[in-house]
Length: 451
Image (cartoon, rainbow, N blue to C red):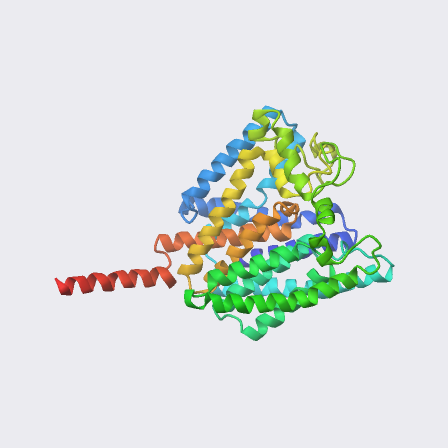
């Protein structure tokens, strides 16, 4: 199963890029999903024996309510078979990756290999992004939207690399890598996010770095570590701002990054477009993408709760017959996962998605404090990754890109399974739980001696 997982990691990071670059048949892009499908027979066979005991009941409860919500959305909207199939494919394709760690125990060595492979593929983004930036300049263009690495989207590339840095923070805090190597990798991995001019870096990088450092540091050293992180961010800012502004020199419409965030008029135009609404002819702002779906669904309480049905507001690579009937109406609005989830799942389904984020966050926090091995180190970074994924849900369509969605749900499943292994005694607890139990034992023994 380790070989299958390594193949999946390579596939989600490269296949779509290779297929587009080499103009291969569209079916090639389905390779990551095919690999995930290969896991299903084993999950069913092993899960029936183990009863999937390493998945906490709270996840089954949320999955059951979410499935009920999806079925209700399909029924009340009378969704055609094509969009329904496309919707189920879109929402359920990550389920095998989440369940796999519950039935297959990946060893510390195997997880280490997975992380090293991901680091190598992350570093691959640097030369690819640099070449793409050079092509943009050579052709007399100025946008950084074509600087996408092998992930086919500039925003997704930046989110992925910042998530990689968050995981590196966890490895640093548990001394799996040295401070020198972390510092080098920190600046190298941020090169693509600098030259592709992704503004969300300014928000996600401090958020991810500080979250992971606070979770992974000891209480007495948190202030010192946060100060060091602040110095690192200031140094990166001193590089990011002038490079970002340099990239904008050929753009007759752009302003420098500091002006963008301090000029309320320009910032508001980015967040909210004029005359934005249902059936808008031009791209709407990020705030519009959050507001308009809720306003539209509010006209009908049933639609507000259950949405328009999975697949009913999304385009599909499978063909026109699989495209939802509301796709054209909301084409300019479904620019974020939040807007897509709200339209197709309603407020109930979207709320459940964010509930899953919260559950994964707290399970990651638990594992970070109870496991001193590589999974515990991963969990430190995963608290930040989960928080950033929740925020990114309101920034772009993260669910469309396998590089984020597949890997997020696999490593989330790995951490959630480890949390249950600790709870069921399959893995001995360490860290703060062990220390707390030891302290309680010493207090009880002391009390016994005094009496």
